[in-house]
Image 1 (cartoon, rainbow, N blue to C red):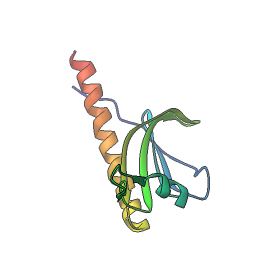
Image 2: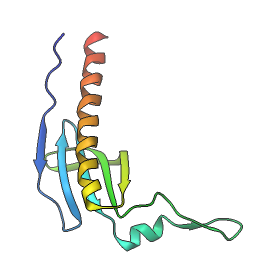
Image 3: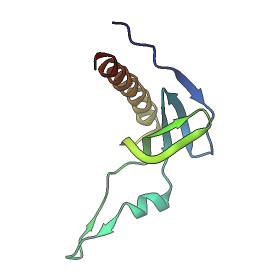
Length: 113
């Protein structure tokens, strides 16, 4: 059984914090430089007064449902954090491949059912 190819399109960054945006089938994979505000919001104070940090890293790759016009659903489907720009760009490519394979598998399951 042949599975239809997943369309992959490079998209323009939406602002200066966006390093890379890729449309992968029905999802947008976006890698960004996190702002200090976002990193601060990831921190919270535990009941005993301890400060616990969220997932560390200055860069994040996120996956949202979308199309060539942008995000259609802001429910985050996947994410990863990175400490360096180089790691973030490598990680972006890995997540793009992951979501190509995921959608191929989903299509195969729909064909088999």
